Image 1 (tube, rainbow, N blue to C red):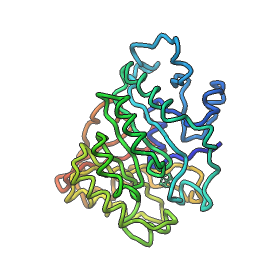
Image 2 (cartoon, rainbow, N blue to C red):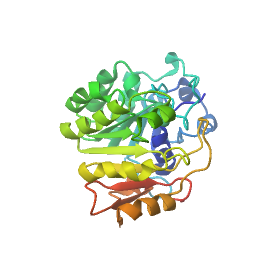
Image 3 (tube, rainbow, N blue to C red):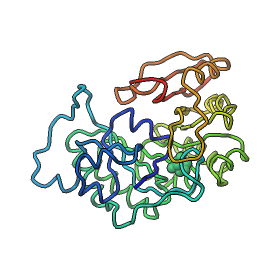
Image 4 (spheres, protein in one colour):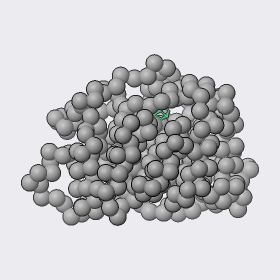
Length: 312
Ligand code: SF4
């Protein structure tokens, strides 16, 4: 069954080979082969921790994969629902949703997260779909914060419902916010997402900065022939704001747009014409899949994730 993840998140799933929790019952009862055949955006590694595995299990003290990389970052997709219908992500009518009974419960997710924290996981990200369409999101995040004490807790959202949730999310102790935004043009936003809401997304960005999250990041997908001229405009947001703008090469998903993609080199050339870019080393090995840059003209950084044009 297809499960949507916000498109801005998918490349990282492939890139960082993180541990993913698939919120579907088939995961709990599937063979490793079935797990590996899941939706391409949901890479469930054979080493995924499942609630049933925790009983009587001798937990590892090191999470090192066969390429000697430490695995300490977990992404948690808590829903396959979304209030938007981005054209590169899903058809206008949406996708078949997993029956509620097949989703992991909050308690199960908290239990997995607590066990992961105990064996050294240092960063957790809550994604969807769109996490904020989950009614009891505050309850979930409060429990997750408790279960992951000491670890970094991040949230990804398309921003439309963020304004009414941001203060609560900040009070709960979420450290970082990623907001998906592909255009600054209201008509184009409507065309790309098949919904309204650009004003709310822009408001959520400024509110997040005012509240003082430790980092605010914009994730953007550039679709050739649709929002190419938003590339440089979106970078311009970081001229006056202390946030990062990150572009993700478009991946072939379940949407209707597949007219090629704008590669990292061409994106960097266009951005560099306006903002001189200087390459910077990734913060840690979790960011090895990203190209990161700073510019004397920008307060924040520019990032590119290039799962199609680069190998990492
Ligand atoms: S915000 Fe857009 S890209 Fe993200 S899950 Fe929803 S429809 Fe897909």
